[in-house]
Image (cartoon, rainbow, N blue to C red; front, side, top):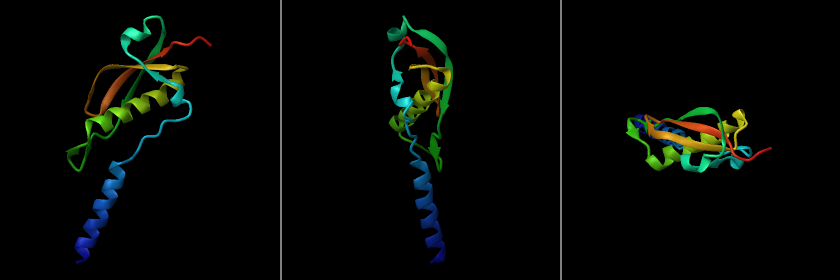
Length: 107
């Protein structure tokens, strides 16, 4: 019986960790997500690589959740480069994605 209780606690803990929400910071809220064609007149500042856990207990998380969290991480990181816009470069692979960071709005 104790083993079942222990396993139940472990399972609940694992589920809570796997739902580890990535929060958009106040600064990150100001960063837009655009496509490459929409940033033609913007200044490219650099790039950032976002990564999240793609599998929990050997099971791949939902693609939508992975992509959402990667975008939030990129938006939060763009502030470090003084950027206001991010553009995904390529596709997500193994829980990682590269984003170019731009400044589109003059200061």
